[in-house]
Length: 259
Ligand code: PGA
Image 1: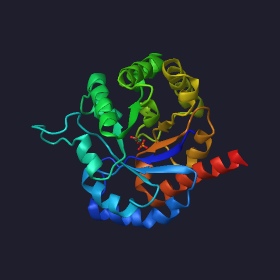
Image 2: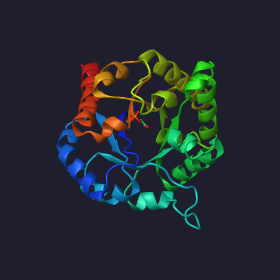
Image 3: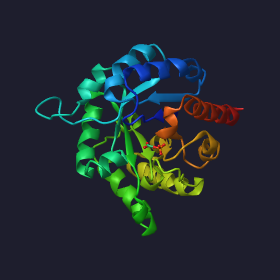
Image 4: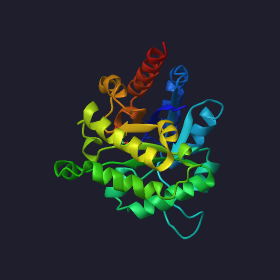
């Protein structure tokens, strides 16, 4: 069964104390969302503390990045093994800021995806086109290339441990959200690509998240769009009421769908 997911990407925000307060303040509300999988991805320094707070709950914990080596002379890097030991089950890989601010290539991201699966982490694989690529009509081609690269190392028995996040770069942190039609077009293409590689039944069980300026004011419309199975949220995930409200919106939608 496909899981609907509301995942937060805090980026470089909140120190240990701020993170603890934030999670304690919203914990009860998040636990009320029974049908939606909530995943928190704080900065590395706050992972272990948050793990201590949520470890006996269904709330997931993820790192925002990792290196594919287990250890070594890689100043400033964190390994998959370290994320696991800090209590993570997930890791965001290929986020557009990693690709475009820090210059990570498709190959580098592919190697991290492989390593995440090997150590037992679930990768949240981010893909998405830049504005000029969309304007040049290259959206689907770019997204396909990024997916093909990352999934080239993912076997049939592993793909169900992966989450895909379509995050158009022009929508991230800009306040310009993709229309449901724009998002769906990419999500439908990703689902087709998964079906061609792994079969329709498996493709239908993979969560494909949308990310890019998701807020409580646009979540209800987006979650109803074809092939959108949840959200990866940056800015709005740092605001208690906003993040809780988005999780509630997804949960309410799922309850409606079932009744
Ligand atoms: P945003 O970020 O919600 O602030 O646009 C999304 C992301 O970077 O994952």
